[in-house]
Image 1 (tube, rainbow, N blue to C red):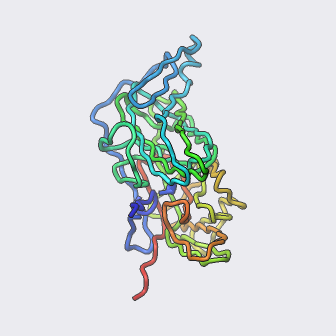
Image 2: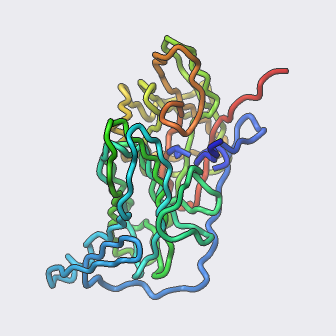
Image 3: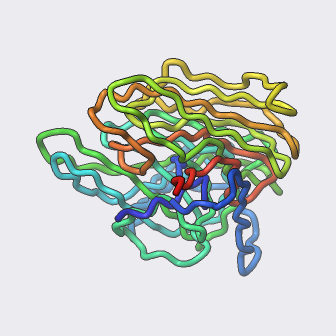
Length: 337
């Protein structure tokens, strides 16, 4: 069986990201381990660098220090193959060859990409490719998470990820080829450089539920409600469901009687799970409610799972002054005896 370690339960990410809690609702946060040593901050970039496994290609850029400094660092996988009709889960790890401060990320839509979870491993992972059907591990510190479609995440100027030379980076990829012929591809993530000296950290935080059992041949909803345990200041977020998802709304308030709508994606398009800027602060005791709408056109009940043929209901956010991963989600209910 595939491991369904969620980015929000025991960690969506959705993607979102199962390990579950016995609590009716939960809030969890994985603190990142401190690096073994401090590295001097990179003052300027002399070239635009593309990494591909053990190969590093360096290309000249214009001799303008500002332009060089802002040239993105591109994390690119080696080529992989997806057979006709194949659903594949791959991890790809590489190592930074310079010090970086990252102020945002972006990636382009590819028909075979279901989601990307880009992380800094806190324990060594195999370099290059590895079969990887675990969506999230507690030894991963998330940097960037996105679903299908073009995506771009920009941090405030005083926030970012400080990554030292020698840091290992890993992208977990959920890939699906619906074509009748094999597909060869690569995945690229642009890491946007920042000039911030001591950036405020940015972590991932997710809301929603894994309690899904969509009745056949009809429309239905899933609702995930939870009470905040910590203060969370969101700067951006995106919805993550699968092919049966039709809409998502997010409401927050001091209580369930004082809810205000802060996000809506209606209609929801699986192929366009774009990240939206969102200035939202939740305090301890606040209530968050995620409502996911579905149209199950199949003859059987569809439940929660990582596969494209199952479903999810997660609202995945990026939060200031947090490290690692946190969540406020409603887990699957235990069957009654």
